[in-house]
Amino acid sequence: MAKIRKVIITCAVTGGIHTPSMSPYLPSSPSEIAEAALEAAEAGAAIVHLHTRDPEDGRPTQDPKHFEPILSRLKGNTDAVVNLTTGGNPFMTVEERLRPAREFKPELASLNMGSMNFGLYGMLNRYTDFKHDWERPALENSRDVVFKNTFADIEHILGMGAENGTRFEFECYDISHLYNLAHFTSRGLTQGPLFVQSVFGLLGGIGDHPEDLMHMRRTADRLLGTDYEWSILGAGRSQMSLATMGAMQGSHVRVGLEDSLWIEPKELATSNAQQVAKIRAALEALSFEIATPDDARKMLGLKGAGAVGF
Image (cartoon, rainbow, N blue to C red; front, side, top):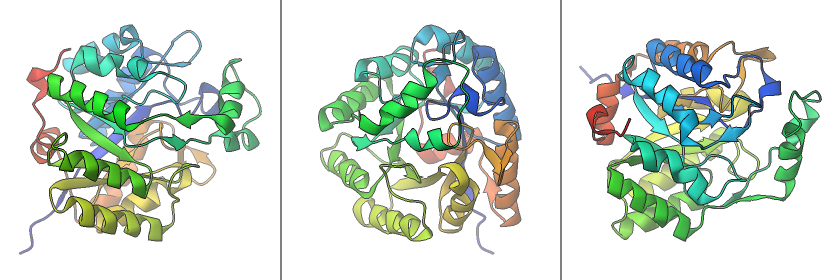
């Protein structure tokens, strides 16, 4: 009998892509984000990926003081792997983006594998009323911003991870990012098993066509061999379809309100847990087993929850 494959579900609870005005269900305060992460873990997410927001105005922030109450709540109430962003948003400096991962020494942190145009201004065609005065300019300004992740930046972040024992979710928005990852691996600055998060459907990166997904997989196999774990992040409407297609080709999956606000066409998701439950049902219907947090730790070579700094 063939061995049943275990699939890791990552849930990206909140982030810099969507603004508070876009959905009443997007968590903003530390207590809301912590509760959303716990619900996602209970629904089956082995990994919870965290950004934070300033509770006063919902603006993305990397100030550790906003992470601390979230991490304290999670520490005693879930065994899910906590993955902290080093991405933040394109308007932050690298040192700003690094602050939470440097201070809290998580098991896992995200790392964008190259500079890119990061166009969010298309959302202005779908949203017209905003709660906060920073939201519209932030989207409009994405016409003329490069999300900076130079070779020096990436090497700097990898060095922080080596010091802290933090491993990375390597976010690859395009084929060139896989080549960048292979470059750092060839220099001995990354070690397997690599956790490769292929990101599809964001303007400035690779598209969300099934051929794009297959091209990413073929290229990763050619460049990285077998010592990596592959995961799929489809932005917006492609979230569930690409995740399911990826799983059938051997990937893990990522869902969450950071990446898509929707549960069905024209229907907002009411929670992160709702998205986790939906992809879990699809995976189980395909006879995959849902990986536990300890399964994820073993597959990704993580240091364990007892070795973090929170």
